[in-house]
Image 1: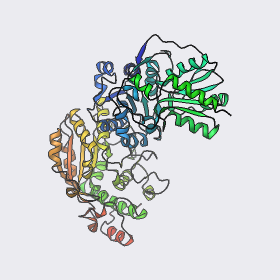
Image 2: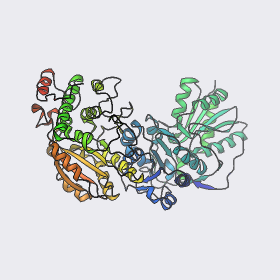
Image 3: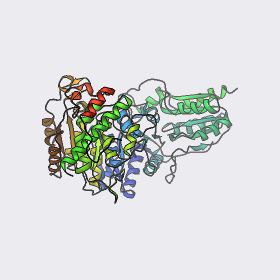
Length: 318
Length: 285
């Protein structure tokens, strides 16, 4: 197992804040919008340097999505920000008609995704957003794993023409990807190569997958560990290449099993190379209040659960 | 353009509307006929639009240095398509494909088929004012002094998103925005006052910080005069309550919500066309 270490932990939303500040300096068309969550989305740096390109919408997410679509007519690149729940589920029809069906160059950038926003509870913990967004034609869906990758993804999507949903979170997590990485939309990243089991992880679960790989290695099991930072377009080639070798797989995500990464892996395998798949994620339930660590443990989104899933998947290989 | 000439174009557009809706036995003639005069006024007189040397319309999705129009109540697509075709954005003959398979003229306006003149999909109500706000904001950022117009329905004012946008435009001082409400008092389920009373829309917008004015949307002279006079304050958006008669120009379609989304049969089409005589220089598609 390849060794991964970190010296610092940061929240992925701060990666977004750093990314959009850099974009402000390099791309005069980038506009940042928010619906009364500028601080939570780490927009302070951008607002200070580029006040004229900052659009406060007040608590009105539907309007923010429409205003964003309108800004693209005029060549602007709007980054519409809110919590993941209010940036997707609350405004699904606005995203559907004014952004995706109209194929507008809007970047929907959403923090506080998943369980790890913690104590606020289920009203704010969306676990369906990847599914809703990936079902929309024309939409690209990205869920980076740490500060550096979120920053790189933020910068990369400004150069991509079309609707994007970029999802990130609130808690501090290890920074283990390189600061100078080039983010390629739709290109999965192989973190470890091994012949025994494939582990496909996204977002905060990528670090858990690495920890799981270490535990498995101690038991003599070497895993393919792949960071699926882009859920759509889905890197089916990378998934199939890995499973053709290992013949079994695990998916891991901070999201419902319905509609999430595991669902995309299952579709790819069922269509091309049927193989045992064990899915780590939330089983058709809402979240609840608690600390991020408590919640990840209670809902089974940990390295230990990935290890168990890997062993189950391996045992099912015929 | 002379008022009389604009009126002739409007009559031809009304012929297009009833013929398009009749041809596929579906679509929304009532609101389309009511708003015909406005769209003709905008596209043939009021708006500054890009034209080539022959005078044909040039479509630029980003609308750089030209005025912009958004149709929020997308169901009145027949009038939008007819006016776009008649002002040179695409061949008039293409109106015959309205609502048919593989057409660029979808039931509700869409960009997916790349029909020149359409910049955003509309049909799911309540979204156009927000889009217009964004476009007006972009014009200001770009130092583009041209104007943004958006048409909405009066029933549509029942959507909550409208009032989010109604707060946004004055707050951000979008003086380059004019919103127009087709105030025909009708919606699918009946008179607007009975379905969900909007009360005093003018007072509401005034309270939100808009410059509010009224006009008769079936009087070409009043439309031209009002649109030219209404964009004087560079920091305050304008709301025009446009009184119209649903089905205007076809007597049996006027005065009720019955023709909101119903097509005329062969006999009714003949009666309607009889009331809309072709004038010199115009012809059916």
